[in-house]
Length: 54
Image (tube, rainbow, N blue to C red; front, side, top):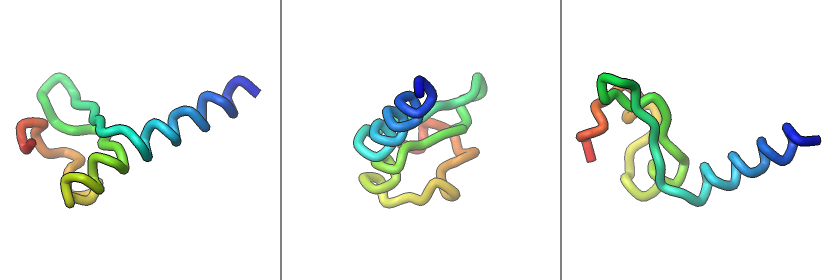
């Protein structure tokens, strides 16, 4: 049950919040759906790019 709520929370966060994660070199390793919607880029276009693209 705990994992269910954790998964639901993460899904809601991803759809409604602009955020990304980068590795230590500054390469994007995760971008939220909302970030893609706002930026006009797809996840495929952003993952692996430098965080400074924004």
